[in-house]
Amino acid sequence: MSHPDPIDLVVRGGTVVNADWQGTADVLVGGGKVLGVVEPGAYRAAQSPGTTEIDATGRLVLPGGVDPHCHVGFTSGDFTSLDDYRQATTAAVFGGTTTIVDFAIPRPGENPADVAAAQRAKAEEGLCDSALHACIVEWDDTVPEQLRSLTADGIVTVKMFTTYRGETMADEKTILNVMTTLRDLGGMVVIHCEADHIIADTQERGEAAGAIGACHHADTRPELAENASVAEILAIAESVSAPVYFVHQSTPEAVDLVARARGRGVRAFTETVAHHLVLDDTAYEGPHPERFVCCPPLRGADTVAGLRSRVLMGQVATVGSDHCCYDTAQKESVSHDVRAMPNGLPGVETRMPVIFSELVAKGGLPASRFVEVMCANPARLNGLYPRKGVIAPGSDADLVVWDPASTWTVRSTALHMATDYTPYEGLPVTGRPETVVVGGRPVVAAGRLITPEARGRHLRSGPLSRSLVC
Image (cartoon, rainbow, N blue to C red; front, side):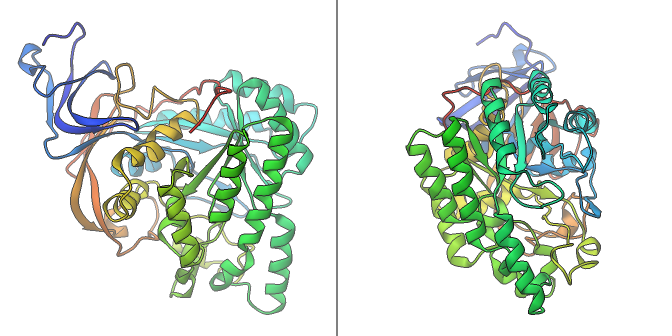
């Protein structure tokens, strides 16, 4: 077989896995793009001198992971997470993720469009590509034009919060107005749902009882707060026929509310995150409860099992990391009061290996469904598909040669995130990336960074289809 375009790279003999197909094939790459997915041996590299070959025999060949939920250099309250784009994307590619979607969250008094422009400019520091969610906190006469400008610049998703009063919390009218405006611009609200009034009450009672430290975190943000907020936001979205994407859903009830709304025709989508599928609230009983403080908190074992079952049932659209790279010192400095603590866990590097191990190798999730929730759907719901999230002619040549049988143990000292801990310390894992290709160039091989040059691009997201389903 000959090919009309110059071929730089052939990934040969692996099992190519897309969300809708898998089979043994060779992947032909040229000019940073996938040129073809062909029968094994149909193309011989000798026909094109200088072509690099990667032998993927006995391996899976996956699209590069798309992490829909990363916070890079994120400031909340008095704390800023410790990584920059170079560090975050280095960790990402070692974990098989080749596209991250970051957030541009304004501080009080900052202009959302200006914050997005500043964050977008950092993309070129990365080892892989990135896209961006903007954020609106309060509605005023300038917001419609800001949203038009953002979507024209390829930022089509806007984060909103129903908690963190006085910092990022938006009221119901602001949420409705932003949903309506984005609906007409081909965009979508992505929303953190926890009912702030319920949380404020439980935290006040916790303080009165002397139970407001990190070990009591799960009690201060109950499941009811999440479920009640999801129901309210679904009602708003349904009332204006707007799409809505729920970040880091941590309860089966919240996922079920979204699934039922989707059954009524609402374009509503669930994201859950790796730590809510793997860890439970017994972590708050250990020697370092502060390391596990995240919002929503880790839930009980029965809740975790129920959430996993929703992934297996097909009710979850995406699995993100909600990566926030704080370290132990930052966490410990205010561990006596969860209201002041930096919330979030480091996880961009461990997202794909941990979920493959727990849900595919041990849980029976088909590899194609793994690709769907880790790669294809995150790309679709961020206006990046089919450029990202699939191995097909014309897609970006972001590929992961995955060893499904490799066994290893998670150790923070062997990871690449800009922190001193991982919430998965000591977890036995089956499956890991062996070679990671970004834009047609091998970047990671055999556990080593072999192409260290920063070539990250900010990705302009396309408008989201009114018929969008996942």
